Image (tube, rainbow, N blue to C red; front, side, top):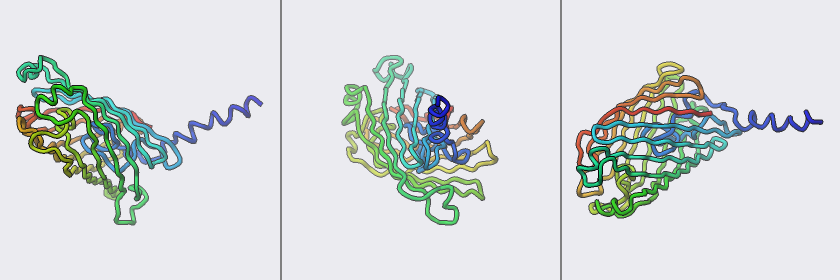
Length: 282
């Protein structure tokens, strides 16, 4: 009787955490927490769970720029390959630049991001004979802890919501993934410098593109481009671009190394540098 009673509990992990999707189709966890690339969400649901299972991904990301540093732990949970829930914390360390900006040396902006994504239609893996991509809609609620500083630099608010729609097409025969995301946002530097400003205080559409080529089962190369709004009069905001190499060590562990071109951030031009991320998923 003990064995019979224990059987359902023993089978539970196999039934709910099957890791049944193809290697690499979980992507990594995006800097704001969503499943996808490093900079932009994909329509794919985080984790390797199939439509009958639950999956999850956790990651840590670090970006080193000439005048700033960004670190971002995050987690995303995929429910039955249909719904994704995510969380990320962004810490933006101004280092010695903070003192020059009048904020104090080592001043850090902190941003919390809660996200949700819903797959609407399409299946990136199984719809190879169809022209349409997998499509998902998502939202990210962002809250910054530095309200007084943000208002002093011209931001209108310390918290806001980004809305986006993503379309992802996987060409298995060519080992190529293509993604396009349209984001509606008024975030300044992802929300690190608040939301809205003296130049604009409306949600505007911003295009985000990414592509990856799987060289073999364990190595992918690619690039991402992310348009950014330019809301603050005191500091120009540029679009972001990266090129990356992703190493899928196992199905559960991946490493991503990238070179990020971030342009001007908070009056400091030519912000570029390495982007490193470790993702663990199932």
